[in-house]
Amino acid sequence: MQRLLDTLEETHLLDKAGLVRLLEWDSPALIHAADRVRKRYVGEEVHLRGLIEFSNYCRNSCFYCGLRAPNNRIKRFRMDIREIMEYARRAVGWGLKTIVLQSGEDGSYPIDDLCRVVSDIKDMDVAVTLSIGERTKEEYACLKRAGANRYLLRIETSNPRLYERFHPGMSFQNRVRCLYYLKELGYEVGTGCLIGLPGQTVEMLAEDLLFFKRLDIDMLGMGPFIPCPLTPLENEKGGQVPLVLKMMALARLLMPDINMPATTALATMDKNGYQKGLKAGANVIMPNMGRPDYRRLYALYPGKAGSMEDGLARLKSAREIIMKAGRKVGRGCGNRKRVLKKA
Ligand code: SAM
Image 1 (spheres, helix red, strand yellow):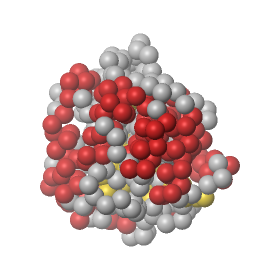
Image 2: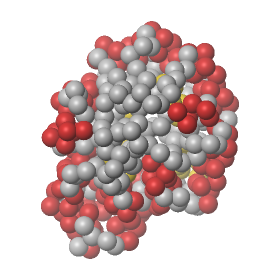
Image 3: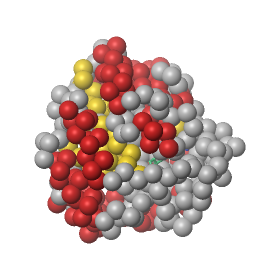
Image 4: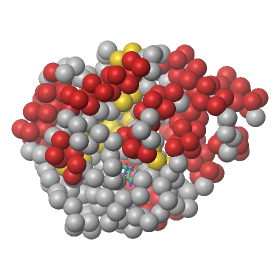
């Protein structure tokens, strides 16, 4: 097993059978190797991305998500443009160099309004990341022209059958198509998966990693599935932290120069989740900079880490976590710096 790991650390290549074997191996050696590769390729900086969750309306019915359209027991909110800008300005004033705008799939914002928000944020000389779901290629193109730099769209699982089981009315093919549109348009593209979904196997997780590598993604967000009340998966077992950490470590070994966050879902499942994620290959944290009362309503899953704190308090604690881990707070926009040549 150690030899397999050494080869992966050296070449950043491994086949599905090898990945499955390493996913089934319980050894700190995997995490240590990922930490060395992280240090060699992306260094000690941890980039902070200020997340603003601006609407919890969603047209989709994802089986795991508390924001799913049929959930009529949650209070819905929608920030208007002025309010989004107010929170973005505040986050930039506190030193954040990237603003991430995320929402459910809420079709009610005219594309021109979204473009205006993007270009107004860009005027503050920071990077803008969008995470607003599946759109048309034309809409992605408008947002890109308005100045958006990056886009996050998780595939959730690269297994088409598992995908379609948990996403009624949605199409796996379309999700993949969107990822290719985003790449074609020149976005830095982020994707990712949920770990621990019912029926998901280690073989499927190994395929997820190979899917990300094949797509040559720039950013990767992976977190545990957390069962959420009022969803069809509310009584299922959630994802396990050690498996999430192994997936992160393998991702760093396979894709050494990508940006990879320690996710809020990981920090929700484990009070030291951010710290553990940073040791397993992560180099990004995304503190929530939105309005505290809205943050509680953006209830993808229960017990979201830090839901009660305000933006500045969250930013301070993220900075402390980074310092205590012996790392440095990123000073620039933290774009992907490609070290490995495209395959
Ligand atoms: N609507 C956009 C989209 O579909 O990409 C972005 C928002 S979506 C709510 C953000 C992410 O939350 C999803 O990609 C999913 O992976 C994660 N999520 C939703 N429910 C979750 C749960 N129960 N446990 C863990 N993560 C969850």
